[in-house]
Image: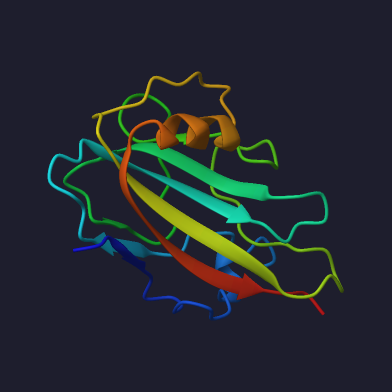
Amino acid sequence: MAMTLTSPAFAEGERVPDKYTRLGENQMPPLKWSGAPEGAGSFALIVEDPDAPRGTFRHCGMFNIPKDWSELSRGVHVKSKGGVRFSRNDFGNTRYDGPQPPKGHGTHHYRFRIAALDVPELEMSDMADAKSMWDEVRKHTLSEASLTGTFDVH
């Protein structure tokens, strides 16, 4: 069974509701995943906008998500000490920052990707950015699932 990633806030290809964007409440939408492979030690998440003017822009990186979790609740905030951690996003923040494409730039696609890892935790610097974190995740990925939402500013 392949891993799947869903959200009760929006379906694949649908618009991300305003409250989950930087123009709204800037909360992470609730996410649920299933079908993790046997032997998964933890999970990692990245949220990327491949349509950004200067190339892929990373809105969130999370890692060391416990292997017994199968969802992230709306607006999850995590302490940086032990357990689940955020890496630095391309805004320079260690948290989720939602969609905020440039006005008039058209529809952007936001890819939420969850990976099941073969290790219980990643050893990453507190200053690690989301790209570096995901590069490390790829070395340990057993399975991955994605969900894409869209957003635009008129």
